[in-house]
Image (cartoon, rainbow, N blue to C red; front, side):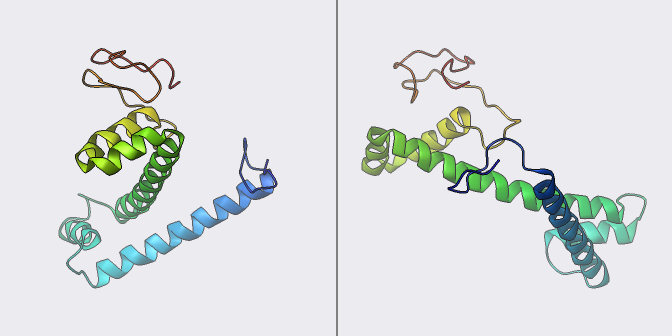
Length: 155
């Protein structure tokens, strides 16, 4: 269901799901043409490296497997990067003190990225566990977590 502001809540309607599936099929066919081009004329790139493996030994790596890798990686890289950026901006806007701390000390950025990945996963099926004793979690009191604890307020 789409809200007036365009935000999607719940599952898309059947017609919208059909349109999404058709777009994904078009993109799969694009990936097939892209891989075929690299098979015909390999270049110095990731796809051509896979094409050369197939050309040397078609049993080692099929064309469909190459297409699947290209299709999957292009979605995965795009989705996780945009989701991480969006989640980080959102969380930092919700916690202006953290934004100001990052602006004042850019060495905190790596830890902030790790915290966003842990607290607001870039993928609905992926969760990250806190792998060190946290000095401060955005939603909990300082020192709340022990190594490998899951933040109780992030679920």
